[in-house]
Structures are given as C-alpha cells and as structure tokens.
Image (tube, rainbow, N blue to C red; front, side, top):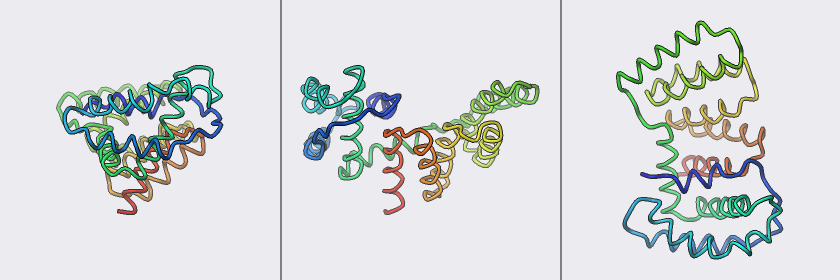
Length: 216
C-alpha cells in the first residue's frame, strides 16, 4: 500500500494554525462517499479524484479561512480536520488508516535487520554523548519494532526517556508498540502524551484510530 497522501496529511503541519471556522462536516461526508466509490488502484489512486474535487478545487477558499504562512499549511490544516471527521465517521477510510497505522513499522525479521540491531548495539555501548546516544537508541528502537521484539523496544524507550523525558518520538513509538500488543488503552495514553507535549492536531488522527479499536 502506498501511503504518500495519508503520511502527507499526518505530518504536513509543523504547528497548528488558527481556524476561522470553515465548515468540514459536509465536506468530509462528501469526501467519504467519493473515496468509498473508488474501487481500483492503491490508496493514492483512489484519493486523487476526491482530492481534486474537495481540496484542490477550493484552495483559495481554504487559504482565506486559515491564518497560515503558506497555502500548503492551510491545505494541511483543513485536510487534517476533514480526515479527523472521516476517521470518526467514514468506515472505509477508517479501515484503511487503521491498517496503515498497524503497519507503520513493517515487519522485518531478516538476518540483515538482526545484524543492523547488533551493530547499533555496539555503537550504543560505546556512545558517551547524550544526543548521539539518543539518536542511536531511536534507530535501534525502530528496527526492534520491525523485528517485533517489542519488549526490547520498550526497554529502549525507557532508556530514551531517561535522557529526555519529553521525547515525543518515544511516546509515538510506545503507542505503536502497545497497539501491536493489543493494549489499545495504553496506546491511547501514549498518543495523548504526545499531543499534550506538541499540540499537533494530526496526532489526533492516531488517537481516533486507537479509540475505534478500543470501542470495537
């Protein structure tokens, strides 16, 4: 599955801008109907006609409703709000984003990944500078999650948080781990910590995906 559009929506904004109240409920409903009617191609292909109709064709209107420095930021803010509504109320889209979230760290049990983990462990053992150590731990953490060595990954998160208790990436990774373990309530706790630290609205998409799992 190609996830370029969804990743674009989730991570486009570096900070939240202030909306002046542009209406998104009916647009998200129309977008949902459009997306649900697309039956062929990857997710990018199926998103494109809906993007053209409900986002790209309204650029001037969108820009006028958001206090942002660029058109791209305005589109990102608007689309994030639409996507939040769709995760809550559009079953087909919610299923797609849930699958994407579950596979955020693709499974990799290859010998190459194991070798990479071993090499990173050697570098971690030798690291003396805290920022370098944290960076190496993050690299190993991602590979451990892909290997599905989740307990070791949680240990790396603890090590990262000993260096930086406000490391947002650690909370996001912890949410992924708990999600893979089926502990969705704890996954939500971790996402909410990331939201509290950053205020980033796109992280609320992750929270909504997890809430659907809790309530299903």
